[in-house]
Length: 247
Image 1 (tube, helix red, strand yellow):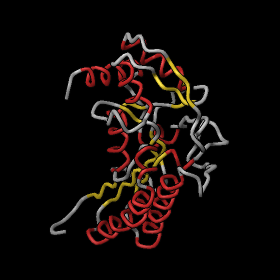
Image 2 (cartoon, rainbow, N blue to C red; image 1 turned 180 degrees about the horizontal axis):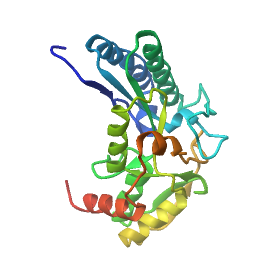
Image 3 (spheres, rainbow, N blue to C red; image 1 turned 90 degrees about the vertical axis):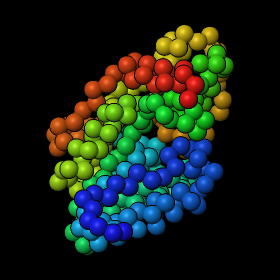
Image 4 (cartoon, rainbow, N blue to C red; image 1 turned 60 degrees about the vertical axis):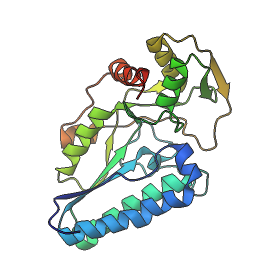
């Protein structure tokens, strides 16, 4: 690449279970070869480097809420491992370039994020529920719906990423909203906001689906002065209105 660079931001990877299970080898290569290639560019250009990692590094966590110091409970050969392990490797190679070559690296462990412009058909909870509710179609909940998630609105996440890339913090930082609800509660919330008449139906839970997910954002608050500001109903309303209008 010609010319100087200030930062290299690595946001590349399939991120929904449907996508990365369809492309497991490609997902592993993006996290491993792709991350290393971008680190080489950052090294060559003396640029800062941001890795967008994931809460999936914690797997199906035995610690709750999850702190950055938790090493996780990940199945390294399960159907989700192509994503989980690619991101865990990406973190490892990022820290290796920092320690070996002095690259100014930053690592964000992103928890569930939502907002306008998501793919309605990639299998993730919020767009799937919104799509079904807007059509008054059955809303599909996997398992009993008792598993929990914590959803962060996209503008809050972007704010956290920008604060992180300009920081001196080299170890991973959780970015997410600590408001924790069950998947069934999310379905009911979206059904109410859309005024849908959809029935809620239940299907078997996929293998290795995490049972609980909630970030401890103490570090982000202390190091970055960051905390999410957009409430769940506010963010869901923005997202629902975007998908109400044909795009």
